[in-house]
Amino acid sequence: MRSKQKLAIFASGTGSNYDAIHEAIQTGELEAELVLLVCDRPQALVIKKAADNGLPVFVFNPRDYSTKADFEAEIVKQLKKAAVEWIILAGYMRLIGTVLLECFEGRIINIHPSLLPAFPGLDAIGQAFDAGVKVSGVTIHYVDAGMDTGQIIAQQAVAIKPNMTRPALQSAIQLVEHELYPRTIQQLLTQGE
Ligand code: GRF
Image 1 (cartoon, protein in one colour):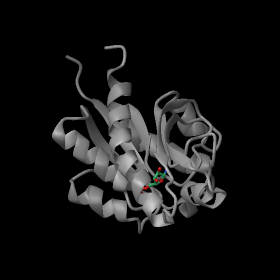
Image 2 (image 1 turned 90 degrees about the horizontal axis):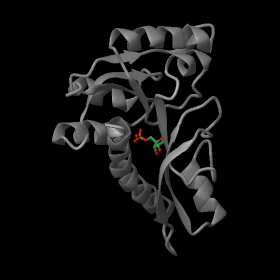
Image 3 (image 1 turned 120 degrees about the vertical axis):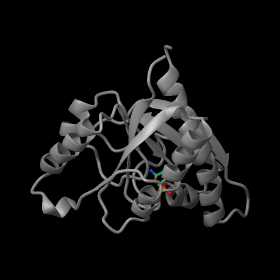
Image 4 (image 1 turned 120 degrees about the horizontal axis):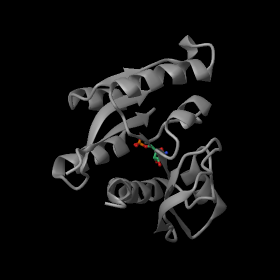
């Protein structure tokens, strides 16, 4: 049997998707190994979560580098050292540049809190809420050089009920994210086996 595939999570914030993926690995729902957290915000909550789980963390401050290519080259070094096979973006608030895209072609995925191509970019939940749409949802997609433009892998709709508040919509979307992301990663890792 093939050994478990090695994942790195990239995150910039709270890390609720990080938690969901970690948990799914613990329960065996997701058969993979989490080997590294990459974080571009030294004060992000997700760092403590990963450290508490004993996961190696690479934290960097983009301002310490002159270009994106420079910090991505450092990230690639860390990823190679940890033998990472897949990059899982989970609230990583930066566009992925050429250096990472070329090294991990077809092996970087992202989760976005809307039904893409609707509401790409920042605050997708607020955008959907303000637009008054009746359905939004969650998309998991491959990452390319664009903003939330890569090929779609999975989507799940979330109904926006009458009188639903924005925080309630956010909770409903997060609930779906935390179930859909681990399940989709598991499908990706096992496809073709
Ligand atoms: C999620 O809503 C995800 O879809 C988006 O960023 C958010 C990250 O949340 N890309 P968390 O840090 O995983 O709680």
